[in-house]
Length: 47
Image (spheres, rainbow, N blue to C red):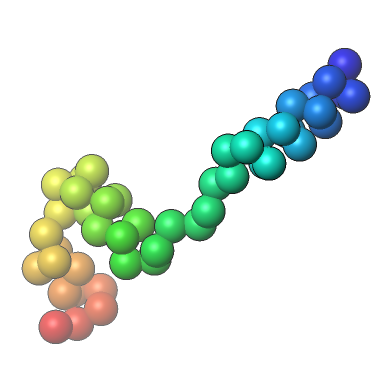
């Protein structure tokens, strides 16, 4: 079973690589999911 999992992971990594997202895009996406606006972050990071 372990061999099968290893083979599947290798196949997926080769044919369907997942690249890390751009940090700004990731923040904007998460904010959109939560219904937040840039103004909501001001208390944490300033204006």
